[in-house]
Image 1 (spheres, rainbow, N blue to C red):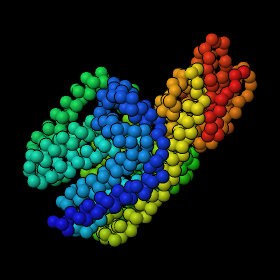
Image 2: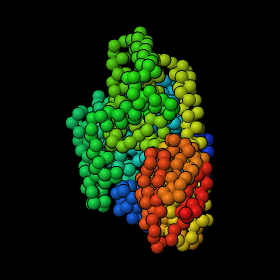
Image 3: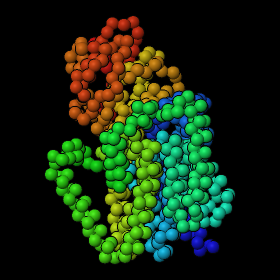
Image 4: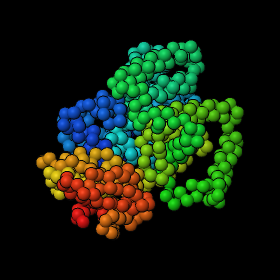
Length: 532
């Protein structure tokens, strides 16, 4: 028994160490965007956000209660929050290893190869470049907690199927409840349970599977009713326009983007030129030909190595993983994702569990050798690690910008109203102050600053993006970087605001009795705009 447990414990320790190294740049990074709103409310003793009564109607009490616990330990220091995220991510990687071993038991008799596939899948997941938003952003923790309990639920269900002990089934159902209380995307668990049960259907009848499924569907129905009662709506979240958008074109694009980003890091922005209209680009056809050639060679190689019966087993397992990927993606398939930035990649955190296992298993099938497979996986891990490092640097840059803006605005704040001309929404997809600027300023000062109004948000390409002013009335504020565009423009009582192109604001002062100080961000610093 000792010889079995020690390596598993040792592997968990390796995952923890690797996670701390991989995300070391961000362990002490400052808060960003939603962090100020959610953690700020908890610090003030306002728990309305716990029950979905504010902040968009999200019902995620377990997620917010993790903040309640941590604020009692760490206060407003970001280190502890980041440590928790990294530890959760490492634990999820280890749980993926255990899930892979259990699922491969029925189709892969070689224990060495089975263990190599499981370790490879877990390592790919741990260092996946599409996980920066979920792990580095403290507010991405909801996906980490939900995925943790989803994996526990699946593992306990498989233990129930193997040993027929109801205690495992009850524990699995309890983990499903906890996953739902962390994030609504866990609604996919009953369907994952069904697919996992069919994968092991030689042990149980279909009738048994559906009786078990009834347990999870009953929990899901009760959760929907309770959640609707608390938030006052069935859909909630980002609203019916977003969540109930079932346009075929929209779903097709989201599925393609999710499939690509579940395997690849953010694509170079230079690719936008030919992917925007792919059928007009020879580069796109070259990529298609290379992919088709690779699939063809892999198919011929597999036919030479395996007989029809073995290929049938392999195909069934690959389809099982593809189905689990799809069903885990369905709750978030309507939400926006970027091929070129980290924006929205937290929605892929759970689906990539099955994508990483798919990659590891397919590599093992094609190589049929544990050492060769591990060598190829190490190459992929190397590419993933380099991309993850580049992405974590961007998150660190955004956190530094967030801290600088918070500090400089609070130092300049008075009792008068504050007007911010261009609050940074994001830095190349990394949220800076999409929300929470007012709360961030309050964190940095012991006195009460005046109310904060934001004239426009700005999508930054770099922290040093500059804006220049011209004219007197109206004033033209133009971003020197064409990619630094303005969004969500709104005027104030003393200022009429409009857009003259995506990177130019038109500011027209109006006579008013109120007093306000006007600031703008340029070159990574806060500057005060002198009144004309």
